[in-house]
Image (tube, rainbow, N blue to C red):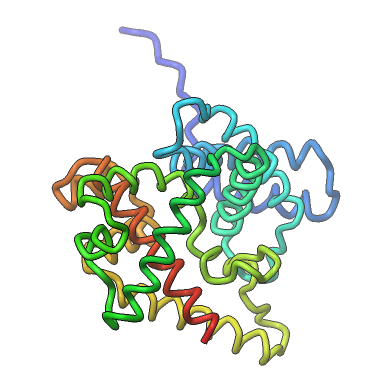
Length: 267
């Protein structure tokens, strides 16, 4: 008869959830750094996930490990500033903070060459001119003709401009609103602020209108990437194209969204 095997310490999902709730409660009462560090360890996979998404398409010299390091600071900031009573899920709030910290660090390094920024502005202006003239979203072929370049060159340009499109979708909605995201601007259910509510509703309406005007494939990419949290590689499998092509589609969609939202702001 074989000796009884040592029974492993198996914790159910409910046990883990209960432990995290208790940890949050303890940290909220004590603000103890050791409790905070336990929360950081628990939510650390979020940092790796966000850093991986942001890092897609960045130049080879940008190390994902550096993005993760920046993201950890965002996670710590999220834990210290999180207000559970607002009813927002922590993971949603933390991912915004982590992404923001990573993007802030990338911007501070001035990692996008001036020439690329200049080409991005050229494309945005061309999209704006064509949109006003055609009263619809221009095709790639029409955009290439406006820029006086070939279609292949335009798609190569998208590959370069993807460096400038690593921005959160909610940053496109409110580029001049102090850097706060939609997640951070959700109204407190316990407070009456009709002005803030109207502003939030208007922002969401503007985004919905802008997305609705995108070409079908661009809409699919935006929806799957930002709302379904699929990676570019996964979106490529859905669409039956390469990850490189999805990067181009994502860049095109972001540029077009930015142009349309800027037009709405000016109106």
